[in-house]
Image: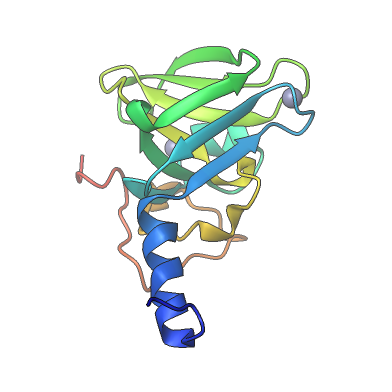
Length: 158
Ligand SMILES: [Zn+2]
Ligand SMILES: [Zn+2]
């Protein structure tokens, strides 16, 4: 019979569930917008481009990217702002109209991928960036994780 009393076994089980099956919820600061997504993020990256700095108010945009098939807006309708990224793509940025919280980022050319602001999750502790992009415009007053790949522009080297 399977038992959770074995601490190593329990940790393995938690890790597996945490990565593969966990349902994650989040929302904006005022609670108007609520969302959930399941499974593991496809990737997690800190974007240091000037657009992300302006749109988030922080030194970079920490985003966890999920496929739209695993992502659902449960409540509220974010306001979308369309612009052109540093890389030249048409992108959409979603925020809460009531409180202004940045929520999602979408590249119009890849509408099946939602980059979700890591800070919007109810428990953002899972966030672990796998790479940093647009480091050419990173601010000297931010802290970068030099142990993960750094890209001066996008991760495609564009
Ligand atoms: Zn709000
Ligand atoms: Zn950016």
